Image (cartoon, rainbow, N blue to C red):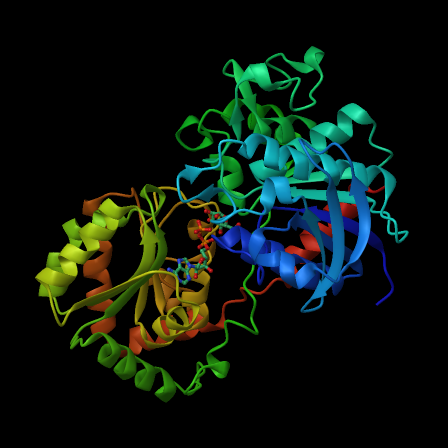
Length: 477
Ligand code: ADP
Ligand code: GLC
């Protein structure tokens, strides 16, 4: 397709190279989805240790001297059709561990590391790459890239438009005010309407006050963010920019998340494969479950409401239900789920760790996916659930509220119900939702209808990509 424009996407994670959460899925999916609409997107992210060997032979398209204690080189290469730009700055990124932390916890120089990513992004946006590629739009993701629109704005935009997407407001990139100079920020911008944030600095706020457009990953989260319960201190900043804030739902990669591609395959009109997958999943975990088999695939953190499981599971299991959990994170939450598995052998299974293959088998074999989040900017697993007829049972917040239609009698008879939603996120509402799940599961015609509706729902990228494309067109003049 003829190129209608060029976008520099800037993030700290991107599938298939590095992933700690849904951010990586979205950053990895956007180039393909936007490419279909003629927008040529390149993705800039750090060359972490695990990526350096693969990028060794790539073309050098930018060199930045004096990048917080060393030289940074940007290497360009193709990864599965995505044009990647890796910032190779060994003094900042060639380290043992994850993107944000090493064996001893968070890297103490995270502010400098991601300021460096943002600095190079702004320079490339303004000047273009050595191979002649010049973007019209810079699209940055979360706190790690938050200083990029600020550097671009304060140093002269060169006509480049900026979009900042908030995937999770809980991570704000805080730094002390004393770092203003070191972070190459102009002192005259240290005021409440500018960079100052509760006496310090926040790279996320810096992006929010300087980007031309702000998006978040669902319409409901966009409105929630303007309220103190969800804004986590930034509600005023976002509300002040309401005119340029919009919510654009994430999609899922329909080729990767496809019941037709599972073994055995299944579809809305041929569900035998799903029944076989359920049997296999129960065998894998040594379970025998007469009622609904629920699954959870999640980071184990407070955000995800995992701490509610011990309270609601005994009744659900008593009613015939079962549970398989795949996740890792907070050791206390891991312990709580392990306690359930020990207390209910044959009904509750747990796998601690990260396992893409198992997650597929769980969505294929599970009857329901539980997402009892306290807040959820978008959420991807409820959408995998929809695709796989693994009926979502979700807290009605953020993107969960935007993607699941509650199975009340009217919605069922209208043929639009796709799952069960509950509010507020507490044990009472969650328990009620699970009781409804059990009743619905045993009403086979209704259950089949909800599964079918879920599997028919469009959760692909096309609609959202068009919304991003419209935004890019607006700001690239
Ligand atoms: P978040 O980004 O807040 O963690 P999302 O639902 O947006 O939540 O994205 C999480 C992504 O990570 C999904 O693709 C989900 O399947 C995946 N995931 C989370 N935990 C695991 C795990 N333990 N094993 C495999 N995949 C996981
Ligand atoms: C964040 C959010 C999640 C969202 C993901 C991708 O990690 O917690 O809700 O789906 O980003 O946008």
